[in-house]
Length: 298
Image (tube, rainbow, N blue to C red; front, side, top):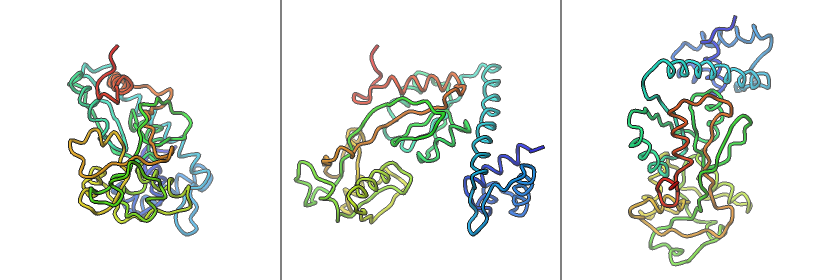
């Protein structure tokens, strides 16, 4: 019989596709982890990984991973449902997003309205969100780029123009707008791969057969505007961030391209049990007026 711990360890190896890194994350010895995977493959009667060169999840492994994520997710959801039904507490909501800058307003309003609810916030790239929702590792995801996966329900929160931020003394600063071709040789400050802004930058340039000249990659997205203002380069900045900033350390220019936008969408698992706290958070986000920064008046 397959043990739950073996399944959890398999998911980590499947996600990292690297035994030693998985062993480090799980805090187990690598030989022990190798035996666990080998035993699991023996019980299933087929390899789950290709081992020619780098460890790679094969087709059978991907199929098994999807079922394991759903099974363990349902088990965890069952435990939470029982805890919610037998507890007098207000519950917990787990929300993941690529950036929380645009969510501070509704999050603050939610906390004022439901002070006893425990809010757990997780940063996650969009590419990991579907996996986390399937596994019911989180309740809700807010993504700034599409998630193309079956089994998810969604609602669009808002659409946002994305412009380019340049230093105040930049040659383009006096323009009313710019084209992507005007930015071809500019030094870009951007987030690392996986972030929506980096994906948008790469897509805009790839559509024109170009590659952006990236001089700085950051993990802290809020630092991009400050680095632009310091004269270190230019970067993509959403209009919402420009509205929220008390002081913009540079000049924001519209980009003459219909593709230079982001659509912010709320996702959750279709058919999953959402706790009362998660349903309240979903209502807060869907009823928020993203242009005025206030709840929608009913």
